[in-house]
Length: 279
Image 1 (cartoon, rainbow, N blue to C red):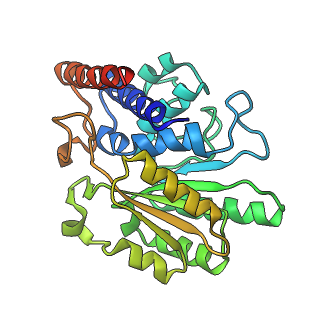
Image 2 (cartoon, helix red, strand yellow):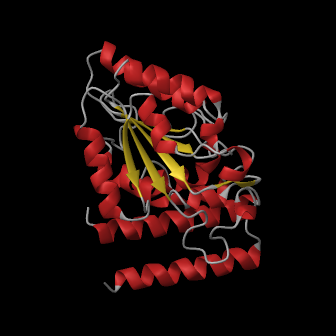
């Protein structure tokens, strides 16, 4: 898929995020919006998956360790065809298969329940180790938040992954520098992130713009071609990306847009999509 096509997918994912969180009157738009490009790249370019056979044995696995960014994952899954896009507006509703955090067994394409921060990292190690034991060649991906890596469980999992040389494992750190109550370096700084992962025997790939598909493509190619050690892509992103009044505003971590805010956000995203379609 071309970069332009991927850019369109990212905008469509962002529109799904706004629609779903607005309909739910709850959710986490900020960190979902910052991850739109990586969701687009994983689900439309990188991963070996089949929306018609979500549980095929040789599929690549994905765990959204920062499970509160579920609106972004759901939007990507719907766009890929795992379930109807109309389902997005049932987010967090009673009886919906789209709950506030991804839930295994309810939503097609979900490989692991997540939401308790840090646990997705550990689960991804288990899946990668299982692939090795079973002599399978599928890859395992997990998206973590930069605030999430303040959790000790992440570093226990990193120690295991590095010691076991899990080269079929790729973590992605969404480094938008904001968590629920402020800037991460003011709350409990994990910087320098790359150096910490190097100490745990990871192949560290630092991306200075996680919204640039050329840079994401190079990063994932690097990870796939690295043998003998797990990889981590540390990507700098903008929380609330492409919605002007949400960008870099910590208050949009876990607040849904009201009617007028959703309307304005969708107008901006529609305009951006129209501009991309003209290219």
